[in-house]
Structure formats: C-alpha cells, structure tokens
Length: 397
Image (cartoon, rainbow, N blue to C red; front, side, top):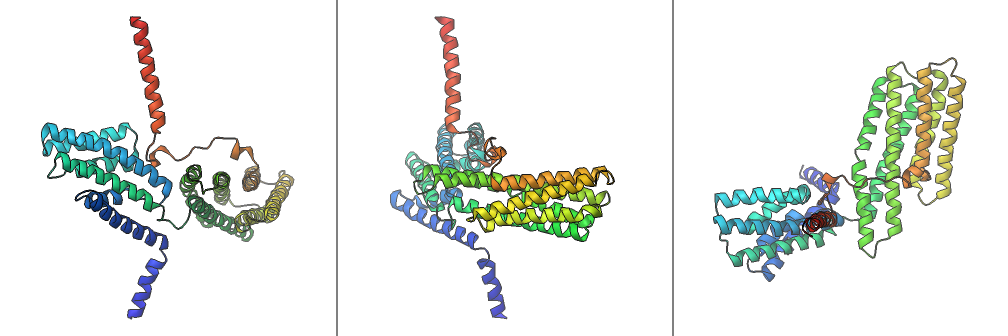
C-alpha cells in the first residue's frame, strides 16, 4: 500500500519535470536574493526575495523584459509612493493614492499586465511601516537586487535554449497535425460520420491554440540570438520561418477538417472520390510527419511533399472527371482540399512567398511586458516636442 502511494507521488513529479525544475530554480533564486540582499543592504533580504519571486519567469528573454519593466516600474512607483508619504504621511490617503497613481502611470507607459501589477506592489513594499529616508533607499536597493537575481536565475529555469524550446513546440504540434491528417484519411476511406468529423474539427481547433505560443517563442529565439554571442542568428531566423510555416499548415489542416464536417452534414462524400481523397490526405500526413521526423534528410522531405502534390493533382483530375455527374458543391469542396494540401506542401518546403515576403506580426501587445517600446515612446515624445517648439518659434519669431 505504501509502495503504491509512493509510486503515484513519484509519477506526479516525474511527469512534470519542467515544472519541478522551475519551482526549484524559483526557490533557489528567492533564497539567494534573501542572502545577497542581507549582505549588501541592511535588512534587505525580505524585500529582495519578494521582488525576485514576482519577477522570475520561465524564459530568459521574457524575464529580461519583465525585469526591465519591474525596475522601471519600481523607480516610478517608489517615487510616487515617497511623494505621497511626504505630503500625506503614511496612512489611508497615501496608500490609496499610491495604488491609483501607479496604475495610471503603468498604463500610460504601456508596461503591460505584469509590470502594472508589480508597480503598486513594490511601491507599497518600499513605503511599508517604519518608513524613513534611509529605509526607503534600502528597500529600493533591495528591489533592484531581487529583480536582477530573478533575471539571472531565469536562464536556468528551463532545460533548453529559446531556439530549442521553439523546435520542441513546432515538432510537437507538427506531429499532432500529421496524426490528425492520418485519422481523417482513414475515416474518409472507411466512411465517416458527422460525429467523427466534428471530433476532427475540434482537434484541429485545439491545435490552432498553440499558434500564439509558437509565435511568441519564435520571437524570443530571435531576440536571444541578437543579444547573446553563443546563439546562432541564422538558426533562429530559420526557426522563426518554420514557426510561420507550421502556422500556415495548421490553418490548412483546420480548413480540411471543416470541409469534411460540412460534407458530412450535407450527406457525405461521393463513393467515386473517397479513395482519392483518402490517398491525398494520407500523403499530406506523411509529408508533415517526414518534415519533423527526418529533418536532416532534405531529399526525403522534398519527395514526401512532392508525393502530396501528386496525390492532390490526382484528386483534382478525378473530381474534374466526375464534375458532370456529381454534386457541384461536393466538387467545390474536393477542389478546396486540393488547394489546402498544395499549401501544406508549399509551407513544408518553405518555398512560398507567403512565408518570407509578407510581414508577420510578433506577439500581441497584451502579451508583452512593454506593449510599446521605450525607444518608440521617446521618439514620439521628441517629435511632439519638436512640433510644439516649431509652432512657438513661428508665432513669436
């Protein structure tokens, strides 16, 4: 009995190795922040540990940005807090105004959700009970120490590099897409129901939910390669393109699943085209799986995508031959799948202008720590000031 319970507990942690690593690193970072804070600043360990816990994140690039946002927010929050305490003394009014002003300033600077929360929290830590000029300076210094240690330790919170994490995510989603295409191929060959087609469509939608995470990780890999000399810039750029390619592939897989679902609702696929559709979907599945299983063998990958194109061409010919006698709507849906499979092959080969010649947005603004770059904000402010100075000069001179 005891052995069974122990085995279950062990599996709970063994199956969550990344999470275990993250909490261990976070715990160690908090302890180090406590020690360093106490060593460098009198009674600074607690504040440093609190700020470190707030700042540490699972990836280096994001932690650098969040740490920067934390430092900027802390400086602003501490200044506002000390001003309120100086004017109103520590109490109800000072605390309330500190929280309100910190939230307004964080919003005005587009610091994002993380720093917007950390600004008032760290400000309240700085002006806590027993506030004085020396105490406030000590707490501010401890805050900066905690943020810096969080940035350093976040590098070790994940067992892989940003590029490696992007490859893992892309490979995992690609393999799932290949399995789904294979399931749809088998279902079409055997004769599928509306319920089965609905399950395929639901799985395809779930795969699409991984796109924002893949895009963010690809952007992170590029940023890491720009700032760290040990990172390969060419590899990071290639991974970024591959992330866009897998996004395009997932869109086509979802469209195919939707087409099959619509066909099931309206009576199913004609018997004369079932075999060709199943073959084309099977070829697309093999092309996707080959891309991620045999990444080193370019010839094999190219052959697999060529096979997918040939199978889709054969499907198109079969549909055109049946055009006179078959339902026109079914023909249109079949030709739609032909186009989808062709786009999948082009995306896997990365030879389409849609991947490299069209701008792709990075992370959405709400997912960034600083939604607007401080450089962009400064440039905009400078332009506004220059315009106003020119108007004033023209008016008086």
